[in-house]
Structure formats: structure tokens, C-alpha cells
Image 1 (cartoon, rainbow, N blue to C red):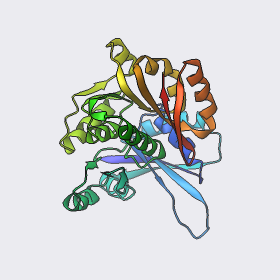
Image 2 (cartoon, helix red, strand yellow):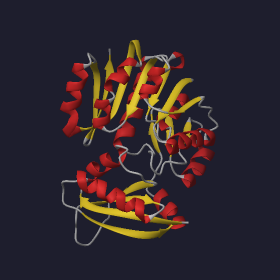
Image 3 (cartoon, rainbow, N blue to C red):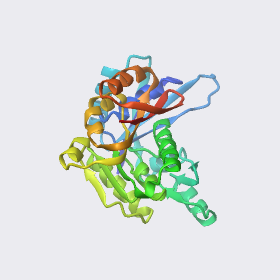
Amino acid sequence: MKLYSLSFKVDFGFEDILEAIIESGKLDILGYNIEYPKNDKKENIAIVNIYNENNKKLENNLNIIKNYLEIDYSYEIKELDSDKYLTSYMEYLKPFKIGNITIVPNLKDYKDYYNNLEEPIIYIAKQYAFGSGTHETTYLALETINEYSLENDIKTKSIADIGCGSGILSLFSYKLGARNIFSVDIDSDAVNCSLDNAKYNDINLDNVIFGSSKDLNNMNLKFDLVVANIETDILIEIMSDLKKLLKENSCLILSGILLEKESYINNAIREHGLKIINRKRKNDWVVLLLSL
């Protein structure tokens, strides 16, 4: 199998803009990663690599990105060997810890850790397009879920993971003790990715659904905790649907918020009568914990 890469070179800091476009769901991609190369020219740059199984899809993604990207950049398209791609990709993924749970997105490291750790561990085997947990938005969401669990008996709570991707937030909630979890995504590949990762961790996620927050509303479901780690504009677009999923005295976690767009989402929060309980920031990204 051959793979193709579309690589953007941008000034350091602007890679977040490309990542926001990728995570918005506007592109059809197999996966992506970000490099921060060291070089003799002392350039402070980042390289965002987008992967597809054919050149035509990459060219279509390129045209979409050009419509949104208003920064200086250069790019190139290459044909890759799939085995080399997967090997190099995994080198960027290192284990990290949230609370007492270690998350390991690298197969080799997973085996090493699994043999030596007694504490809870989550292995994210498939995450090429859907999140290993290392990006700020996912990391912030994980931290906020963990903090919620310290203040609430999460074992008794119902949870909705909107835009579940790799399933990492659902799996993390499960490891914290939650069992009533609904995981939904509008991408069928993400649904399969979540199910695969659950299987690798010997976890049974009973409700992984191809759909959206609107579909959960149509099922007349309500939750104690709703988590949505999605691009800012989409969060604003679906705010009404997210609010309808909340029980009384429940909480909503919004992640994927670009710092420069925080004022827009704050306006949407006020318009829908929601209250900000807590705010956390990591680099150019923000997570908000809300209540009715």
C-alpha cells in the first residue's frame, strides 16, 4: 500500500491554525502529525504532514486549506511507503499521565509500561486522524474530566462524548469508573477507531454511535456530563443541541476553542443561558466547564 503526504511548512505557532482546519472535519484525510525540526539555519518552524491513500484526495484537501489559510506557508506532496510512515509517526507519540491514569499512544512504549505499571493505563492504538491525547485540546479535555471526577461520583453519572474520534475521552471516563457512556461521531472511521481502541483495552463501550448531538436529542437522551472536543465554529453551531442534552445540575465541557475565537464562543454561551464554572488554557487553546 502506498501513502501520500501533503506537508506544510509554517512559522512556529501557526501550526495550530492548520490543526484547527484539520480537526474541523472539513478535510478527508487518513491522518496527520506535526514536526518541529532542528536545523542549521536556526529556523523556528513547524511542519504539518497530512496523509491520504491517494493523490487526488490530497489535492482536494490542499484546495480547501488554501481557502482558509491566510498565513505564509510552503508545501509539497510526496509518495511514501506505508510501513515507514507508520514507524516514523509512532516516534512522535510518548506516554503521558492525567491524574493516576497513564495514556500510551505508542505500541513499543505500551508494552514497556504495561509490564511495569500497576496503575490504570489506556492504550490508544489507532489515532492517526482522531487524536492521541497529546494535542492541547484533548489534553485539556482529559484534565477537565479528571477534575470533574474528583468533585463528583462519576460512577453514577451518564456521559456523552460528542465527536469521540479515537475514543480517548470515553475510555478515560471508563477508567475513572463511568459505565453509562454514549460516544458519537459523524465520521464512520472515527466510530470504528473508538471501537478498536476499546477492544485493545479490553473495555466494552456499549454505545458508540455514528451520528451527532442532534441524533442523541432525537433519542430523548439526557446526560450528567457532556463533553465536546470539536473545532470552535462547530461548537458554536451545535451549542443549542449540546444544551438540550443536559440534565438539571449537569455540566458541559467544551474543548477545541482557539484563544483568538474565545470571545465568539463566550457570546454563544451567554445567548444560550449557560454559565462558565471553570476555564483552563494551554498555549493557544482553551477548555471551558459550563453549567445550566
